[in-house]
Image (tube, rainbow over all chains, first blue to last red; front, side):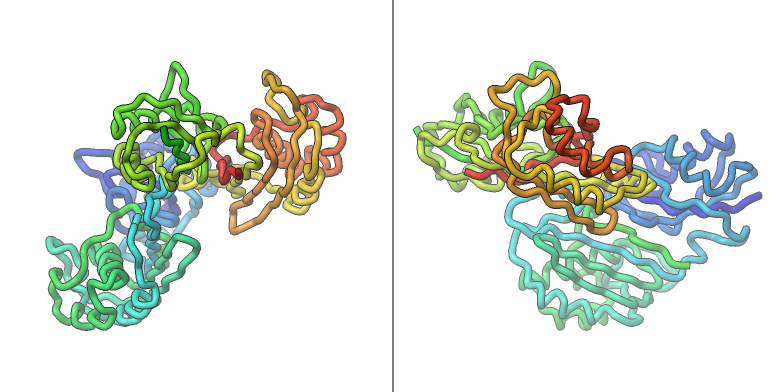
Length: 244
Length: 244
């Protein structure tokens, strides 16, 4: 048995998300189908974590065990020839048989892109969140620093989640403006369900003046989902990199 | 009668192109339909020029005559509420009744984007031309200068075209590398059918070593479509701006 690690990019627009589901096409399923086509094996593809419908990836990671003797660096080309055009394997390599994409991930980086202009841009419609009103960049930048470090992020978790601990550590959180785009980059040891999107929704409420940047510590302390902002939509979110 | 000038952005992926056609949806048709919905009028929307299926626009221009008394700056919002998400009107203004989008255009700027990396990127699949092999940037840049000025561009015109004159003037032609993208920007007083795409196809042949950069003057002089390179695909092409 060989353990193969894949690095994957996808446009999540047409999928129900990473994870297999009864209704709707998943990215996991598409890749398992492609693996079956080239190896004849029905494998269980383990992803580093789920992404929701409409969320994209520039560097999702997954692994699977195989008996196939296809040279491992050829796997990416073989799989790409069987995959739809909105999914691409950018790297395939052999890893230790104990490697597990989810359990061994020590850090993840997400990107979130806002298109900040009065009128929508059709070229970004599936790839950035359109915010048509003025956003105070300075205030949002000011707010990012409160997220750094280890905190109980219950306020920034979808309310129906079920996890052992809600404490997470954020290492970096940057914001950059280029033209009409505002690009956030956030790196942490892990993220709760919808955490990035709720953080962004909260920052947009800060940028629009509904909340103050220094309210973040209170929102964190409240451990109350209601205290934070809304959940920003999926189309602006990218899983950029998983670290091991 | 009021003459209204629209500035339009679109993702051309799902359309047969700008121009109305028997088979397939056109951008012109979609906008005429939206105008009908808000004014009740069946207008003839005049575009600055056609774009092919799959070609995008960041600043296409079109105009139409109307008796409607909707305030002209509200037109963009009213139309956007009726248009599909892959088309957007970013500006609407009243112009002189003699203004004609096509005849009065004095200059146009196109952008062409190449994604130059071995493995395809699903996020760019409809928005950049994927060239998976090495391109010599210096050689391509060297080649761009030969296009500047007034030339008979017959060699760079789709062979079934029918025009009065094949002489066009190129004012600027730049090339820029950002990450894995190569972005060309070309501005001229007009472009023959498929001219930008044939120029880019020829530059790719120069970048890959099939042609030399200093062969461009000979290709132009030959006035022979066969002498130039292939027609680069539509997904990398953007009509960026029309000047009046």
